[in-house]
Image (cartoon, helix red, strand yellow):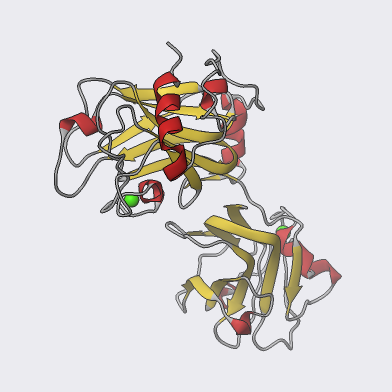
Length: 340
Ligand SMILES: [Ca+2]
Ligand SMILES: [Ca+2]
């Protein structure tokens, strides 16, 4: 039986109320077998990518998507990936074979899926069993998908988090679905999709308060080079140095890394009393958020400081490193892990 046959029927009947995933309304489409064509990244290549500084982030958070139905306005599809486990998505009572699909916005190499079951009242064993997680590069997964894993009739414990580690998946995928494999209710408090997020800062335009010389220019802060004394230094007379990276468009952020001076000159004042700001104004005096900061205790010599952004819902175009007192600054590399 084509895996989407029941859902296609259900979607047609609900299309006027809820809309459908593109193509789901075409009941003539037969399911294809095997994964869709997509760029292949071997396990070794993926590990190598991680080793050079990629990070894992929940790339499903606050993305768009579709569902076969929604119970009511308190249980809409977006509640399944809003970063809050105390709410969730529920299909309507008449939806016999529910599904939910998330558009990650672009294809990601996937590492792990987490599904959080209902945390509040009204637990039903039926809503946490008999489902699969699908991945595809077609929004209409009847055109092809891979099954990453699933839970059978044994079901999940009440108020639990199910973790699906993805081993040697050879491809990157843009669309993720949670699909019932038998008739019954479904509830997802949170569906987390951990994908590999890369450093988007290299070679983007940088503004700054000053630079020491062409050897220590602003462009050295995001040239993907931390060897020796490669890095940005403000001028000696710059009382309160700062830098702003322009990512070119808004990015959802997973992590920021700041690499201190790796070569000569153990200068504690160059690696303390600074903050990382984010904004959608190039002039951040018009508004910004403080993502994190390092105080007077400072960072170790020749170190890399990691700032996990975590549950950040907004996208930002401009990222700044700003001194919080009048003091010297030096940055070997500023890395911004995110996705448009
Ligand atoms: Ca939620
Ligand atoms: Ca550098």
